[in-house]
Length: 165
Image 1 (tube, helix red, strand yellow):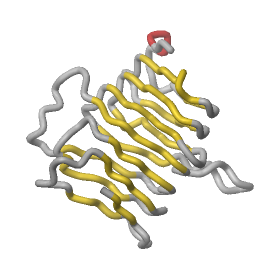
Image 2 (tube, one colour; image 1 turned 90 degrees about the vertical axis):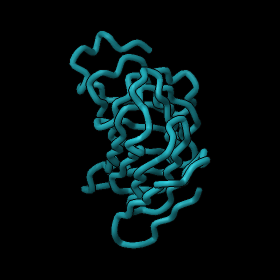
Image 3 (cartoon, helix red, strand yellow; image 1 turned 45 degrees about the horizontal axis):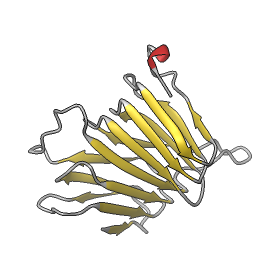
Image 4 (cartoon, helix red, strand yellow; image 1 turned 60 degrees about the vertical axis):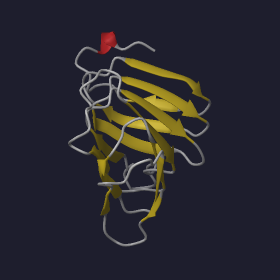
């Protein structure tokens, strides 16, 4: 389902009562947050977003297991430092997802995953990816499928020796 935000303010799409969507495609510089998603295990593709966004699930959805998964595809999200302009790490918020797949394509992306509950990251694609923060509890990172450069700051993990790659 393509969603585009060409306005000057952040927007939220309420997906209540929408089922069967396997992929949401978010495009625009301003954020498009998703609320009331009916299912995990789907893909959210973000292209060009420069503001923080969140992905939230319907409260009736049971995400109490230990293997709930999502895929975030990233293309040109955030921005590198340019002159005196600081690097823009777009913050993503998502609760109750243990397995997060990050797929990159097109332009390099810069994200802050400090508000994503995932304990496992699988990274693939061909574009460079910088993750400026992760949430405590991250245990595994597999970036063997990524041909671009990968930079990740794991200082948010209180027991970093527990991370395997």
